[in-house]
Image (tube, rainbow, N blue to C red; front, side, top):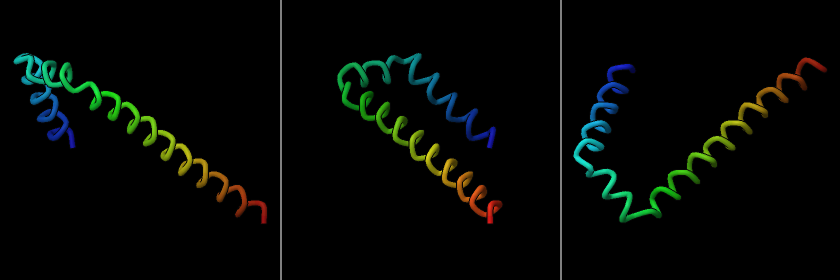
Length: 63
């Protein structure tokens, strides 16, 4: 797993060094908004799934 993270990090650093990524996001700000909204929704879904598991566990222990 850490190999993939390191490889992805190297790609991001290379793109930032070449200003390729910065120029892309400067011209396409919609992708930044879309990324932030998707992260928020993923957080909400993850929280609800975790909460559902906890409620289920409480319901089973109460029976």
